Image 1 (cartoon, rainbow over the protein chains, first blue to last red):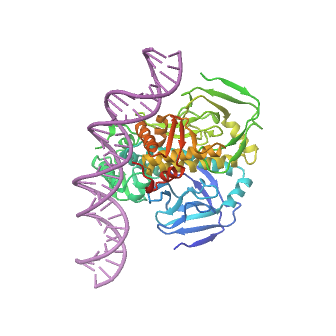
Image 2: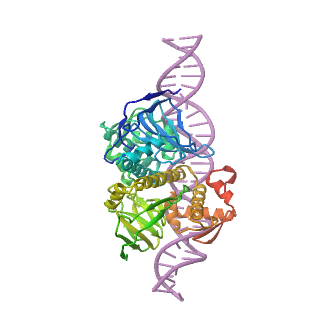
Image 3: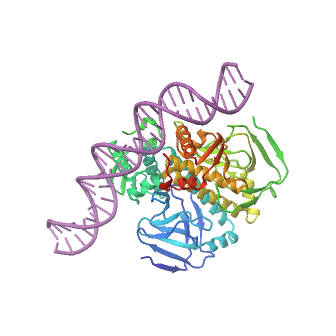
Length: 240
Length: 240
DNA sequence: CGTTCTCTTGAGATCCCTCAACACCTGTGG
DNA sequence: CCACAGGTGTTGAGGGATCTCAAGAGAACG
């Protein structure tokens, strides 16, 4: 179960939207928020459900949180994965448009929406920072729409890996040894595919010696050029 | 070709993001912008191309502008359709992430980005209005991702029509007689389908007496309940 | 009243999904 | 230390929704 910890320390955070290739935006909380609650989430624990009233905005501190929408029959579309430093809840005004669930153990800092509104009014630049952050998220989301609407399974998976690689580099780590914090089913629901197709596509990339699987959650990129070529739909890099 | 008209009138606009079901946000320009340029666009004329430096934000005054991304081989994904009252360019900081093209004759008001920045600093509430606007657009985009990733052709087309209907109602018009300002190819590139599939799906909805086609750009919804049932993926409303 | 663009319809191909079996991994308890 | 169970990932075979290719019908326009 989850535990709540009150904290009086100021939370100053470097906000880097997932998959962002923009320069890093710095947004600081806490100067006027005297006490924000930090919350521990177990694997599969929900932070909120689609349709619920929005009470907080969340800053991911540790772990990865998935935002998703469901259809009546259970089909799921994962909208985004929120990594440490990402802010959750900027898309909705009043009511959550997505459900938010921890992929594994995670820690988030909960900021009440009224505190956000207060900060926007009191701290010059804060609102603008949030605007830029939301704008970047919109740009990322539209990039993902291109993948969902127009790319093949191989292109989708390659795009997914390239983005993880970029994020990895942005975090100061290597871009060729990637840790994949999500399961096949979550990758599938993010890319609009089935688990089987995701699995088969990983195998094809492996056989083509573009990647190597150290484990199910560790991918080594052997041919970065080829991978990004596939991601961008270059027909010379087609996999069979 | 396009004509540019200088204007000194204040442009006070009601901003309603496309497909929005949120309450209407009011944002006013012009109090500090003494002269904004209004621009006429011919059918298929581009406002900007993906990758270009962003110089302006645009307020659509008349007509519809499509934002799209291309893959190297020509595959296209339309990100959104901007209607009168919508603002274009809030997603990008510095460089355009999409190309913007008028679907038919259109008029836009051009607001220099530095004027926007000035307004954010000088007019309290302006930045917040833009934030809410961008947040709504993000929510809409994620709704569209569910369509692209997880819905069938019939569900996509039904969702598309329902959203046009909602927008129509929000504009004070009837929700059952819809005017469709885009061609089949544009609908296809928005929904991640081919023109042929879009055409066939319209025919199926027509045969099932859910809609009636007055012309290629005028759709009459005969069974709204059934249409929204299909849009939400209810298996009882499947079309064959 | 032809020219061109758009939309519709058909037939066959293809990519991905569905269903099914099996392999792998990890933790637990005998 | 092994047996087993449950969750997760892989692989195969077949089917189906959508795409591709192609022809023709309509609509718009000079």
